Structure formats: structure tokens, C-alpha cells
Image (cartoon, rainbow, N blue to C red; front, side, top):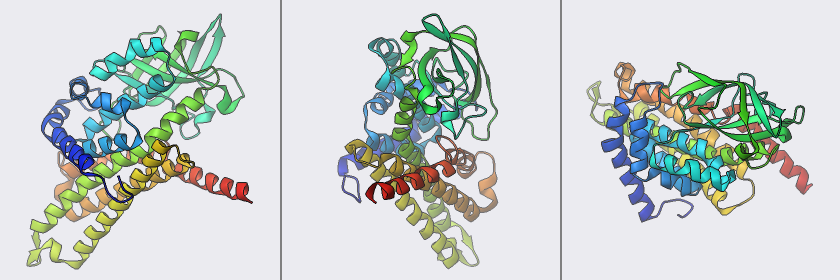
Length: 375
């Protein structure tokens, strides 16, 4: 890939993914029950080799995968991304036993994973986690709650971040792999604006052992941040995919819809709006690709570039989808319309995996830290 375009093989792969999403995955998504894990859809992702590709790819491939699926079927993209988010800590920090036990099922689409970081009192401030891991012999018992957890309470295992050393901030958090059938672990589904499966978890003395630790005790925050640094640009890619779908629909609609004696595209107010939408989408794509390429190359400043990509792409997608609804008029507000669906889907990415305000904080901190380092 150059700084400005994808190579022919990448473009062909993206087209294949969009076709797969529209023809094979969208019918499965439409049969799913909102707010619940769509296991047939997850199984289809596994059968198509997409979960394999997700877990084995670098950041740029991950972004292309998420963008292309989102353009054709946002539900399929989300189901795939949640598998990656919950499983990436196992791939990167798990033991050989963890990987042998869980990864074959995840790759095949039989096993559903979840990433359990957020809590009722610790969302954006992830270092303020309160889920307590109290010592119990050689192991621990987890006591507390997690909230806003995608795929909960229907996942087969959870990557759980808990406080093993009180008062130590980010340095006192440990990552655990917790199977869903552990005694004391219960959950409830939450009814959200978007149709994703999201729930809350209650840990009532859930036993975990040293064999359940991902990485090292008290070093779990690093596992969480490594996962988020990889996935933040790809959240931007998800947003770009939705924005491109909204833009495609708007170009088609304004080319054929007539008003005031001609097609909408002939009205300067409309054509300029569409041009603005297209320009912002292209800028967001390039920012996402640049952040992903920097991650793959091991360049400095990855957290800042990932934050910029996530921030700009998700804010752009919100703008583009809203503008598309406005240009379509009341028809876009009917239940079942593509834009009605995208309008509900596009709001959450500005919050999860670090709200827009958190991304701005990350960017500013790195800018000032760089200034001090060079002074």
C-alpha cells in the first residue's frame, strides 16, 4: 500500500468481503434476535475463514476486514470484531494451554469470546477498576461487577481485568481468562440503542487460579492497552465502512430522487453536502490506514495515531450518517431502512473503547510529552 491507495490485491479482497457480507452474512444477520449473540452468524464467519484472518492479521488487514464487512453488513462486522477483542489477549498473553483449549473453537466460530474491562464506575478511566481479586490460597476470588460487556452474558469465556493490588492504579490490575461456567459468575442482558449483545456481569467470589492468568499478575493493564491500541484504529475502520454505506446510498438517492423540477443532485446545496461527506470519509480512511500501518511497522506514537484515527473516523461517521438521513428525508426514519439501522449503529463507537473525549486526552498528552522530551 502506498500512502494514498490500496494495491490491486487489497482492493480485490475488499470487494470479495463486501460481496460475502451482502450475499451470505446479511441474511443470517437479519434472522438474529437483537441483543443476543447470533451463533449461526459467528459460525458462518468461522467457516469463511474470517476469524482465522482476524486473529492472524496485522492492524492494516484488520482495518480492511472491518471496513469491508461494515459496508456490507454491520452486524457481521460487529460479531467478528467482538471475537477478536475477547480473544486477542489470549493470542498475545495466553499460555500454550489457554491457546490449545480455546482458540480452535473461536477460530471455527463455535466458541464466543468477550472482553470484560468496563465497570459501572470505571468506563473511560480504565485504571480505576474496582473488581476485586482477593487472595484465596494460591489463587484469587473475584468479587464485583462488570458492565457494558459485549457478548455478555452469552459468551463462553471472558477476558476479565481485576484489581489484584489495591491502591496501585494501573500497576495493580491482572488479566484472567474466566470460563462462563465458573461458579459465582452470573449476568444479565442490557437493552441498548444498537442491536448488539451487551450485558452486565456479577462476580460473587468467582474462583480463579494462577493457571487462569493472562500474562503476569499486576501487569494486566498492559494486556488491555495492547488490545485497545490494535483495535482502536479498526473501530475507526468499522465507522468508515458504515459511513461509506451511507454515502453510497446518498449518491444513489440524490441521483434519482426528483424535487423542484429535477434530480436532487442538481441542487447545489445537495451536491456540496455530498461532496463534503465524501471528502471527510476519504480523510478518515487515510487516517485509519496510516495508524494501522504505523502499528504494523512498530513506529513510535502508535497510541496517539490510533486515538486520532478512532476519534476522527467515528465522529465523521456520525456526521455522514446524519447528513444522509437528512438528504433522504422521512423515508430514512422508517424501521428497517438502511439509514435507520446505521443511525442506531453509528452512535456507540464514539463511546466504546475510549470515548471521543478520552481520545482527545490521549492525543494532547502525547503532544505535550513529546514537547517536554525535546525541550
